[in-house]
Length: 93
Image (tube, rainbow, N blue to C red; front, side, top):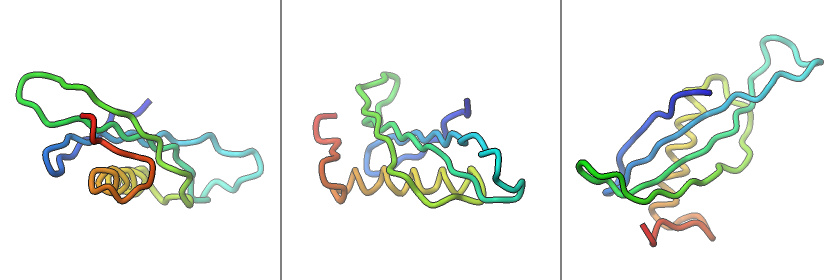
């Protein structure tokens, strides 16, 4: 399991995990890989850990690296915080 990477945006802490999917048997070695991406969003707090909410990032095109997958997770979390994703909200945090 990968270690979550974190970012801060508009008073929220964002943690992202990009989990590499297993390679299919018939896939060539050099093919771009799919990642399952999970983001956790919490209010930024000093010293205390507050309540957090976990969101799965919808399926994406294959990524060249886990760094690209993580960037997609951070972008998705920022869109949630900005209320740009229908049905996803951090209003209760």
